[in-house]
Length: 360
Ligand SMILES: C=C(O[C@@H]1C=C(C(=O)O)C=C[C@H]1O)C(=O)O
Image (cartoon, rainbow, N blue to C red; front, side, top):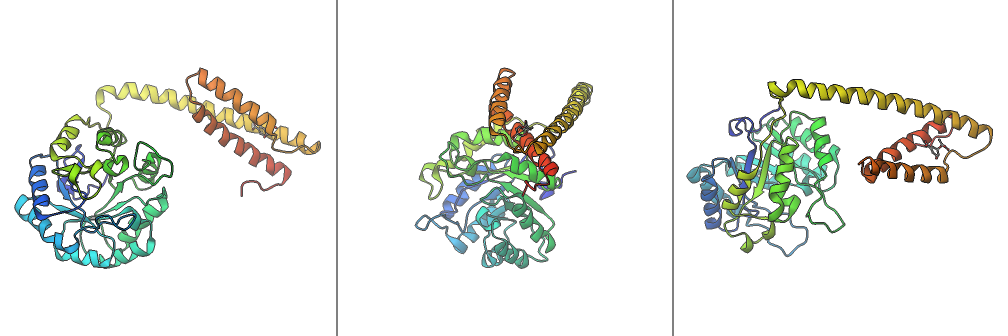
């Protein structure tokens, strides 16, 4: 059973929706956005950047504490709980003093254990939900470590935000989603809710819907989507913000699926899963068989002073299998990944016959 962050806010089987501007620019902009968002019942939490960690100096760095009373008005007058990012102890104290409902730790901060530890200590004993964005680099341990630091200080209502990772190559997306990282995270801590941030992943409002859909299909628990009354005029991250109306359209189009199997399809799925189990048994037995043949080859090689790694044979085998795989509808990238793993294991095991330590 998954823990439901800020439990009363998440309707069962509905994603938690956190929306609001990238930056709290002016009191009017904050209230106008919040009032428009409040019209859509699916929006659960209002977000706004107060202190903005910018990659390079010179961009708008947020209004700081001056913006906190604007968020208090959202809470009391509009009636939406409010969430902001905190990056240091001063931010935490100011946010708590202002009665902010939910805090999140950004990607640059979660990559720094010293900073997270200080924030955790400042929050010791405070019962406030805290969300942690994945670090800028795809490091699941660092992400988990940040949550563990908070948990050790008694913070119980924890959640994660998946915002993708930095990439050097130019791409249609601002951040590489690295979905595998989020899947691994879920594997490690199945009870912590994960919220997807399609605004930062895409950097482009046109692509938000499709990334949000992928997140829901991967069983994410919520979405954080940047929303601005006039996105093109936004003081920060203009291209990735949508109007509250556009947000409603995106939400309308999302298909919300469940990981629970309805009774009527249970039998069909069970039959298909049995086939998968049978195939997996065969794959494993064949892999064991293949490995034993490789070990016999290693014994011959040792007797005849041949090297373990045989580049020509390996290249030929890889090419042949990629071509065969493609004919069967398997992508060359996939076949190549599978065979590289098999080959590495084969080399490592042959090394044991030679008493070589290869896998270091
Ligand atoms: C098994 C061999 O040793 C190595 C492992 C290979 C494999 O597992 O397919 C292929 C080439 C070699 O690098 C071999 O030489 O055939």
